[in-house]
Length: 80
Image (cartoon, rainbow, N blue to C red; front, top):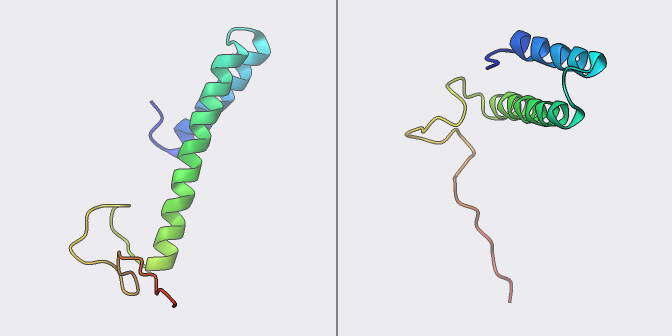
């Protein structure tokens, strides 16, 4: 199982080669591509979270306190 970007790249290039030489069917290659995109999108979300909050710990790890400016409660004001 891929654990870092180099492993993911190798898997994707192996997938391309498998489709090209006929040893991997298109449907299975599509699933690998879709799952790879999920990994990439997760990494993008982690980078954006770090950029916005300055939090350097593990991504989405339970924290005792939320970063400054984040309340955890979305409040709506009713206007009458």
